[in-house]
Image (cartoon, rainbow, N blue to C red; front, top):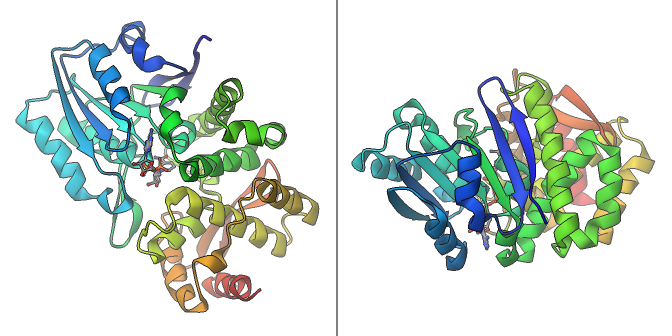
Amino acid sequence: MKETKLVIKTNSKIYPIIIGSNLLNKISTILKQNNLLFNKCLIVVDSKVPNKNIALLKKNLKCKKKILLLFKSNEKNKSQKSVNKILNVLLKNNFTRDDCLISLGGGITGDVSAFAASIHKRGMKFINIPSTLLAQVDSSIGGKTGINNKFGKNLIGTFFQPDLVISDINILKSLPKREIICGYAEILKHSIIKDKKNFNFINKNKFKIFNLESKILKKTIFESCKIKRFIVQKDEKENNLRKVLNLGHTFAHAYEATLNYSKKLNHGEAVLLGIKSAAKFSLLNNNLSKNSYDKIMDHLNKLKLNYNIKNYFTKNNIGKIIQFMKADKKNKSKNINLILLKDIGKPLLNLTFDHKKIYSFLKKELMN
Ligand SMILES: NC(=O)c1ccc[n+]([C@@H]2O[C@H](COP(=O)([O-])OP(=O)(O)OC[C@H]3O[C@@H](n4cnc5c(N)ncnc54)[C@H](O)[C@@H]3O)[C@@H](O)[C@H]2O)c1
């Protein structure tokens, strides 16, 4: 089946996302078709991507010098130290702005590599080949790059659009079920912030998506990327509308940070918890109807995605969660900015709450 192409047009760059199967075999043609030629490339590869995919990429890339750098992906390595490692390889090998950095990995590899590419000589060519479902539907597009530090998640970074994104669904075959769930969390997020029709589509096809059925999976990735494209094209630098992509993420980032980015709760799982918290908060704040709330919960229950904050936190953690929520980038005052829901497909932007209100919400959630 032929691949599909989605073009993202932002003020800073126009670039295509190619979605399909077996694309690593066709990479040389794809690069030519998109006028992406370079002499040298550094491929930063997630160490869990199967060797056969790495070999395929290396074999089919036609350039003079190819360097491979393995990256162990976890939130602790989403750090300045990892960025320095990449920069040192680029500088030692005299990479110019016209040479290319390629990320073959999930959201963490992509965010770290893109950040390094954006600051190497003030910006070099960058291609993202996302290898997780989460990265294919979300992190590989839109140009947010970044790393964590002790004050919180993704607090250091740049806006830097890639030159090309290649989403090959074959690479997803080696993903553990837990990682499919994480990608699904962002697919669900996109549908409930923008598109009731898309929510109905994923609701109908949820099991096929989880089984990575080719045709449905490609359509799901394409439609999810289209939602993100709509938002990013309107507001590249997150001045306003783009904040909706943070639905559930203010809670999620604080949950992850409170657990010190433990493997017990990875990013996508935290997003699922965060979406549930945001939906419940919307219900209790009289923004979301009980009927729409139940539809979202029913969807998650049918998929057996019964994640509950009670399995991760106790009352003693609330203070720390609030502290991280206060440090969120969206906040412009002492209050906490949340994205909530009015209905499926209808987000609410720029609502701010006193931290005491969120404290008592979390306390009730942990007691129920
Ligand atoms: N830049 C953005 O706009 C944006 C958007 C959403 C999320 N993010 C960031 O993305 C990160 C999460 O991304 P993620 O969920 O992809 O995490 P990840 O990059 O850590 O990948 C998840 C796990 O899958 C493994 N893996 C990757 N590809 C594999 C493959 N093909 N086969 C088997 N295992 C594989 C990784 O080693 C890792 O253990 C977070 O840090 C989050 O902040 C960024």
